Structure formats: structure tokens, C-alpha cells
Amino acid sequence: MNASQRFGPYLAAALLAALGLARCGGAATSAPAGCPTLMPGAGTPTIPPALVYPIPGATGVPDGNFTLVAAYVPPGGTIALSSGAALAAAAVPSPLPSPYASPAPNATAMSGFAVGALAPSTSFTVALSVPGACPATVQLGQFTTHS
Image (cartoon, helix red, strand yellow):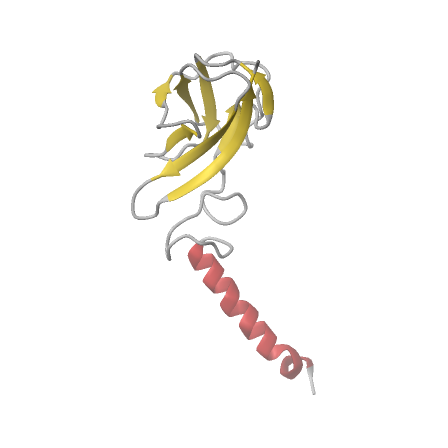
């Protein structure tokens, strides 16, 4: 048995799988057929959304009245905290508050969101939601306010 006879079926299966993944933009996801995913490493967009400020997992974050900063929020996307409704858009502070997470390379599009009063010593999850024909919700991280 020569190499093409031995590996031919496997090569054909691999080619079909590669074509299927290319059509979908990456690895299999739970997104509806033809929809991009927002999860890192699982398709488009290639620059995943990210929480820049406060840093994911941060503690001692002010208990409100600051600007949350996220990198690459798709058009129509909204940011919400686990405590309630979507946050209103706000100007990205310049310079960024410290400490902040370095966004992915080429993630030049940053968005600001106004955070009102928060309960002290409380953990909050930050989530991005994208509506439309391909809805998705992605948790960007969490932070805890100071006591």
C-alpha cells in the first residue's frame, strides 16, 4: 500500500474540515450558522473584546463615578455590570486610569462607559452584549470595589 492509498482518506477528511472551518471563520462555536463569534481564538473578529480599565480581577476599584474602558466593542454592542442595565457611553479618559490592562496589538478602538455609584466591597461582572441576527454575550471580566 503506497502513501496516497494509506493517507488519502485522512487528507480528504482534513481538507473538508478545513474548508468548513474557513467558511465559518474558525473553530466550532455555539453561535448560529454563519455568525461570527466574539470568543478569543474561535473565529472573527480577530481582535476579541477586552476589559481595559479596571483590570479584570482588580480589587480596590472606586465605588462608582468612573469611566470603564473596553477595547473593541462591536457596533451596537453594549456593556453592562452584573448589577443592572447597560452603561451609557462616555469619553475615553486620557490618559487612561492606572493601572490598566494593555489591549491586544492593533486594538486601537477603545470605548468608554459611565459607571455610577456602586456598593462598596462588592464584586461586579462586566459583560458585552451584541444584539441582532447573531446575538452574543461575552463576560469580559470582573472587579471588586474598595471597602
